[in-house]
Image (cartoon, rainbow, N blue to C red):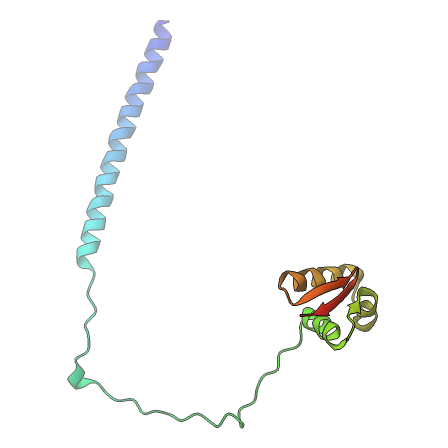
Length: 129
């Protein structure tokens, strides 16, 4: 029992020492934070009298600029096929025209339905909204 009491006393003393160390570190951190807050330089606003006017460069006409065409995504391809069919497109037709796997078509259709771009007319037949 005496051994246990002495071990507990040592642990208690160790914890007190650690608590003092943590308090000292916290004080140092507060000091550093306070000193850094005071040292921050403020940005100077340029006076309106000394502002320089930048020359405005005219851009080329829009017709002359080249537009970068992004390649169509797989979802865009499937949406195009569905949109072109009058009565709706079945998954079998989409697979045949695109060459994608059944799983890929199912995932694309799921995403398009969640985005409310297509709706289901019948089981496996979809139309564009």
